[in-house]
Image 1 (cartoon, each protein chain N blue to C red):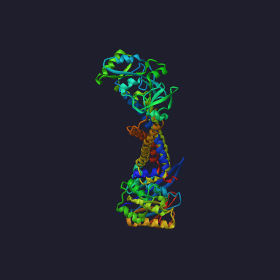
Image 2 (cartoon, one colour):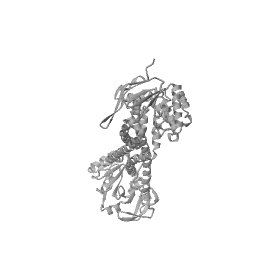
Image 3 (cartoon, rainbow over the protein chains, first blue to last red):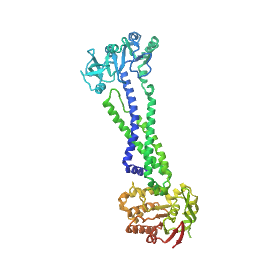
Length: 365
Length: 226
């Protein structure tokens, strides 16, 4: 009967109920979108790093975060040196140049990279042939609305799209290593080196060898490198997520507090009626809390649905720049955050309603 | 001989309005037997409603004694008065006071739910509905019911939990003559068939005549009993 009373109250003022649900849903969408963006970018980076086929990665001495878009501090001759170490099957250097973060143009030694990774998968077109040719992946082609043979402006120059490659192998935008080195003024310099070992069992040994020879560089196995792609290793992202979550709680609190306070005012007489029937303070409080929690549940569901809308919008407009994913594991977390906010928001109106004097409430017009 | 179901002695109630004390009851002595139908008449401000509110446990007295169904209301906490309203007393108001969002059936069901007697229909529930003639109007919301029907639903809501006392505050005040008569007949039937103790406030002498007795109030006191 309590549930029926609450449902009928919600149905009686549909606009108030729907607006409350919408306002509660917005921060849920914000939280889920932020998490989806973060996870999406990390998963996409992981997938593309794994796609190199390398077992070890060597980064420059100044590299600090997994989000390291550019900078070429490693002499290219280090590639040849590493390649001569025992158990090293192959090594190849790449150079990164950040354009519109997080988009990066990657200079690749195509022949060596093909040997290491199996080569790019061409969805359309083919390999680089001309000096101004560029390879782009499918999401970037969609984002820029370009096809084979089209011109695309990058690094203040126009490039001809020679091939559209499938995602998942190192880079979204590929230029020959030498071309990008020259453009960057980083001749004979590279950003990182990918190393393939002869047998997986020798991976740790190769890491040790490189560290001994080049102690100032960051050398890790690919497994360790991939494991580093989590939110804890991206500066500020945890704090930013916490701030968004706090905003979610505050908005949920404020919306529900205002909405339920208005509802309690509008229903003063009904509260008086319930009290005249013998309803306890707990019963009145429970009705207000249950109503608020239902609004919170509705807001959570709407927020989840809206996050799919955000996902679709981002995937349509900027699939390469922001590879968002849906993270169902965060639905209960976002729901809990919302319910905490709505529960707290309903407390004051609920206690006010419970404390109403029945005679005054019955006389309320 | 059984003791009275309602007994007050030197009952006082003073309301504080701003910084001014306003006496509403100035020593009311009242005794009501079980099964009695008592009408209470008097001008506005004579203390009729205040007496109802105290007997019904909506507000505590300021002084004196009041016993309802063997319980001393003067010594009751707020929670104990809530419990009294839950099971011992049923209210019928001039403005019907039905919950507008619920159907007639659910309005009655809420009262049973709060009283802890369950909201499913049982023999007693069916008997009350038959007596009130509202069986076919139960699935309508208050705004789809006439004033007379709303008041009969309100009466049903008040009595389905089997209260010892039914307090009716101007139950015909918002009704036309025909509906007033119908509601008063319902109250008389309840009293005669089910032995329901009823206290009814009214301004209407014809309505007051439905009671076994009538008390007259003025300036917070009972001035006459007929």
